[in-house]
Length: 411
Image (cartoon, rainbow, N blue to C red; front, top):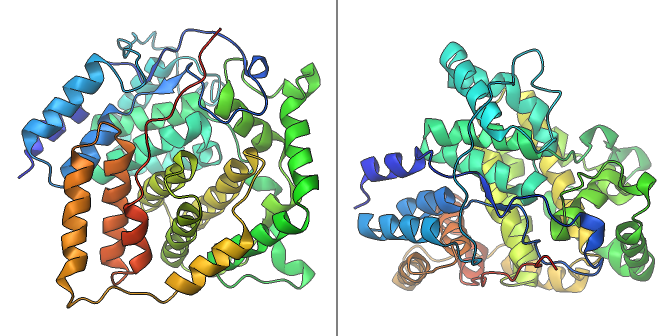
């Protein structure tokens, strides 16, 4: 059984900085435009995410401790973590929004949100500050959102403070204010999967033009085209930031389901849609992050008023399209449609013990992984499988593990 005091101690650890290998280096445009690998600069510290997942899967305390100590000694990327930085106490209520997205003063943001939580309480802190930060949820390739949402899942105060600070630090807006209702042209998507298939169809119909648009956007490194991009962003984060800044009409035509239905239904539909994407690209490192960040966003939204929960749904949908478009590819509509036909109504028989046995094998396999994204994948999808009446797609998707990705090295 997981030792909760151990988990609390590890999640409350303040020894390490939120990113590593973070000294300023090559800027985004210096990297080849056709590369999708993460940059070796500004990698996110995942150690606490692994603790939450391993504990949620029931890993023994010695395994959780060993993973944390191993990661904090040398990460799977081959880089050491950095020591925590000291706050200059320069962030205040009057200026906190001024430095959002500046990628400075993480420790100062921690200090600020720590003070404000003591004054307001956690619930009011989240209600007051999260809505301003939601459009920037994709920053740091969704890891700030993951840090905050998984902290809330675990119920750890200090990790929650870190998550808020990281959201402010890494903010890159997905510009939800640009969205317009899809229904005004007579179209209507009943559910997230309908929107996914519609956009996949648009990519198939106009594939070459859309690919050229993305490639040209990424390749344009003129001062005017990169003025909104933080100069330290590189690799995948740079590509995503470029698409976030520019946008596309397909991204900003907001489907009715994002506003018309209860947010709880939207989250369920989004889990199904991103699981379809993951099965269309099994083991894909980028799509896997859509699953783990969706869990995080759902946890965050649950702490907000209902209208802000719908806003979170819209931000998430807009952001994942920007991430998907940034790779200049989209899963084929035919493949997604075939998977939808196979899994749309597929449910695992509650009387069949082989399904539970398969989950036991997946859990055991994931707990032994060096790559922490895999226990996170299994943790999230097993939860969703249980709460959605054992929908088969989540069990099948959970079996596709991802390797630790290579990273773009500085030259």
